[in-house]
Amino acid sequence: MQGKKKAICTTGFIIVNIGIFLGIMLIGKDGDTMFLLEHGAMYAPYILEGKEYYRLVTSMFLHFGMQHLLNNMVMLGALGWNLEAVTGKIRFILIYMFSGIGGNLLSLFLNRNSGVYVVSAGASGAVFGLMGALLFAAIRNRGHVGRVSRRGLFFMVALSLYFGLSSSGVDNAAHIGGLICGFLLEAVLGEIWQIFRRSRYRSHRES
Image (cartoon, rainbow, N blue to C red):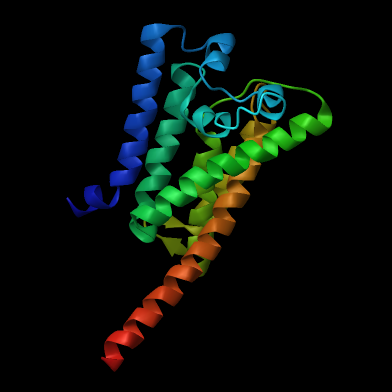
């Protein structure tokens, strides 16, 4: 029961992603690029010229078909279950959301510089952010976090990046951007949390 309580945000994000996917299926074609574009997918010209900045967030909750959704939700469940127990709810939500946005921003930047504009969507930037945060937490904890080892995480990161880079139709910039953001966010937010805990402990001792 305790594990389930600790993973409430992970469960919540999975439910939201699946719920949106089912809603998209009811009103249109879940894997149709143009349909997802009309409903919030990432597309550089719409963001840069149309100022539709909300797409940096909405695209995180859209998926190109059942397989795309399942791949991301399995990873979200596996990573989130371990990370949320370490970070707590608020830090976990911040890491998930800002990693997804950060991954989308890197993808947007590279799209603009290359002049090659693609429609993209999916939770993978945020999921890679959880991977990056877990990696930092494992380094900070000298090898392990939850049931995951630092060596296992390095292998998971390398394997995930390899599959992304060797596959077509994958937004690798969002993956790499999310991974970096998650790593840095856990470094910063974890340090802030430790400072807060130490100051609260001192104030309790003094009182």
